[in-house]
Length: 600
Image (cartoon, helix red, strand yellow):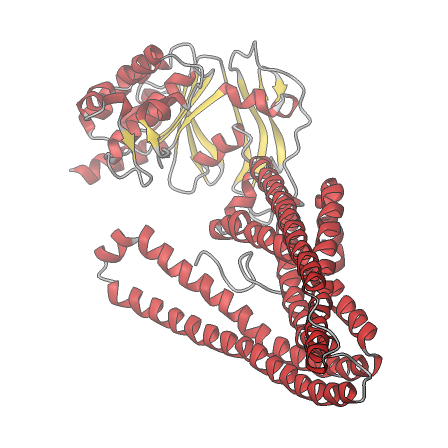
């Protein structure tokens, strides 16, 4: 699955709410001026909206008094006064709308910039993490941090920050406005506050776990869909469609049940709050009518007060919703900050690689992906510049691990590796990486043109240099047979070209880089024998003057190597040229002969 319960995509409470909040506030602190302006506009918009009902009540009172005066023959409706009130009311509504628009615009800017900054930091972090992190971390979890968690943070920041201020100001403001109309009625209305708060707390408490489950099961369904799409060939090959659909149906059913419960409980909030508001409305209407009859309050003020009382419970429900948004935002932020706080690789090197020749020496190298289990136990080898070195041995002997250590994908547990007499740690990593080009057994190409993929080896390479490299790798012929030639697009799944063609492109890409040290890890495993022979001849030319490492299982491809290192269980058991090792009739001869025994 791409995401599991408790993974980065799950919505849950932050384990360290206070610590995460401090980090979050630090991130948005550079926008504090904008945030203060947004909060001021939010407060202004809310105040104007709160004052409006009382002014509208004054218009009602003016009309009522005019009608009474007209009936009694003592006067008439003062339309000029009503006009003035309505103009004032319209101005308040327009200013409130403008203030609200401005604060939304500012908050959108802040949330977008904050999420942009975090995405940028995560992107840079990915390139500074040691390779060992990716060995045990689920790719879906990493993707979830970059997409789901950042999106949750951005959306909730945009919604919750000003809503929190507006809800608090609305709650306080409405109560103050009600007190200016009638203190007794305000106290009666305020009694609904604890009742409404209790109802909201109970509903939130009950529904929260179902919302958590909903997000988790959504992750399960996403994972199933991802696996079905990416692994559809395997599913078809093993006739596992029915099993795959059963897994999807199971997770989909769980998602449906959790979503139903979450939406049902959260859906109860508004009807119940409306019932409480209507009950309060009825009480206020009856008591307000009694006060009006006794001349303690005007008709317009009753209208204003009733409007205020109906809106009094809304901020309570909004605060409950905001509290859930903030919890979700802090949980997402915590996962983002946890990712950003991961230990990075150490780069203390300062040396450049401008004059590197390619002399490499391994001294008592020890390494294990797990510190309790060493794969490379005591590896020693000395390679001169320009030599063609083949590394052979059974599966699990540590062949690929050696070249990964050479390229500093992992740090050693013991010993050292020297490049031109200097420990590879003394070279600055960004310079050190330019020394190598690597062609792996598992090819990697990205969505783009063939020209772009080949230029990935050297972004400054000219079209002619790229075409020459393709010719050297025997890729030029098949490229020109494509409809758009070098401008042909490789799709996202890279399944519109064959595996062998992809291998040829990766070899050409390595040639374009023109490295000091070339590493071929089963680089010809996906091509036919004839193409392999052609590539071998081409690579002989490419490897002239370069230190080259060739990892191969087919020993017939490394007969002309200057030196063959035979590995078994992390150590070199034999060393020499092809003919010398065959004459020894040892471990290498046994492996070499066994391949031909299988063929016969």
